[in-house]
Amino acid sequence: MEYFKWRFAAAAGLLALAWAGNARAEVVVHVHLARQTMEVEVDGLNTANWPVSTARRGYRTPYGRYRPYQLQRMHYSKLYDWSPMPYSIFFRRGYAIHGTYEVRRLGRPVSHGCIRLSPDNARTLYEWVGSHGLADTIIEIGD
Image (cartoon, rainbow, N blue to C red; front, side, top):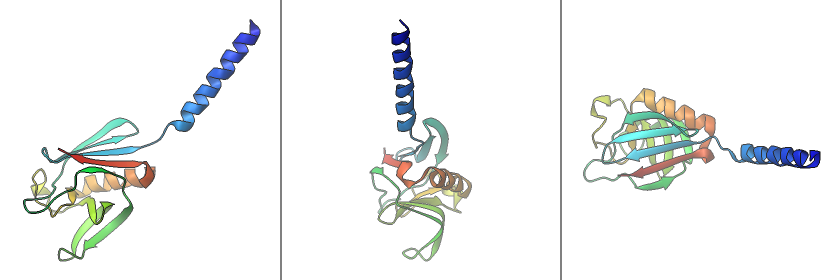
């Protein structure tokens, strides 16, 4: 009987180690274009729900699932009159999630394609992505 208790305890311990080794800290960003909102999950917990602005008529914000490839604390857009883009998280060929100083326009599609947030929310998201890492961040964009 002792033999079975020992084997059970050993198997339970190995299972716990395997599960802990596979557990991943993760940031998941859900952008809802129709609602102009962003939900953020950090380590599986719904952590934030913020208004955003995405592409206005004539421009587009790409649908899909992405991993960010670059963080820039302050970026200036060469395409759009050196517009400041604080706390930029680039996810697809020049498209980024970033802060905007036009906070009164959040919640409506007004951008050239990027996903705009208030500067405070952009900083918070930037810090979460920075601390968890690009490889452990997912950006999902859809309706």
